[in-house]
Each structure stands twice: as C-alpha cells, then as structure tokens.
Length: 83
Image 1 (spheres, rainbow, N blue to C red):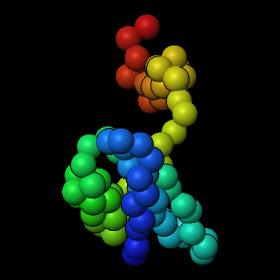
Image 2 (spheres, one colour):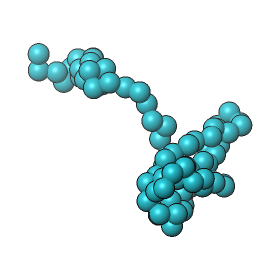
Image 3 (spheres, rainbow, N blue to C red):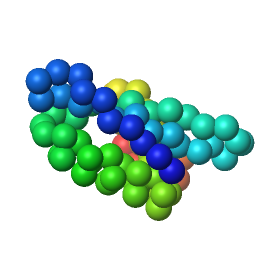
C-alpha cells in the first residue's frame, strides 16, 4: 500500500492513499492534516497501518436523528424498548 503527501498551505498537508475494494479496484481517499511535514508523514503511516489491519471504516453521512431512529427501530424490533 502506498500514499502521497502534498503541501496545501503554510501548515497544511493533503494525504492521498488507496483503499483496496473487495470487488476489485481501489478507492482513493484524501485527508487534510495541519502541522509539520513530519506530523503529516506520521498520520499517513497511521492511516496506512489502519487500512492494512482492516481497521478502516468508511465515513458515513448519517445525522444524529437518523441514528436515533434506527436504534429505536432496532430496539423495538428486538423487544428491548421501554415504550
């Protein structure tokens, strides 16, 4: 697995790395990091290690209200709701 660091501003860096997909191909991830180049390199190494250990979870755009509704429906279906 490989990654790349690109300078964006005075103290800002862009991390770019690939995540292999189960169905083949790849997914390119971009992250911004503030700090020194050394800190950006450390963050890239941490992200790559997390991907290698299958610990990466794709961020989801889920609102708090949607999460609460989903959990409530789950509790209601399993019979553990107190309502």
